[in-house]
Image (cartoon, rainbow, N blue to C red; front, side, top):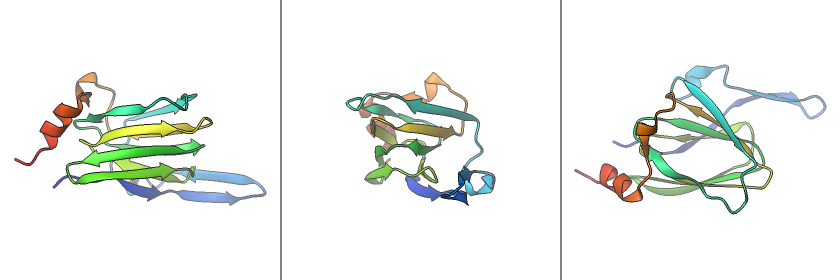
Length: 135
């Protein structure tokens, strides 16, 4: 059975008077071991990011500032998620087609289960549909 995207809440410590820290210290709450971390910023408001799926890589996306809207599609359907809090992330399973838009001030960080491998990417929506079609 295919996995589906879902929202994760991270522990947040601090107060409005001193600021906050959000942590993945309790890594057993993450759905995978993190192998790579990358971030996206200064994305033009009219840019559509994503437009791909990964064959094996799982990800957790967090909007550190601003907001990020993700249209996520798996073999089980489509959902739209908006991230706008640094203590909330979206789990993105393997074989999930994403289209992502950013607010002008957005900075997003992504935790990934694998090192970068261009062979892991599915850039063709038609190929994605073939890979996720019922057999």
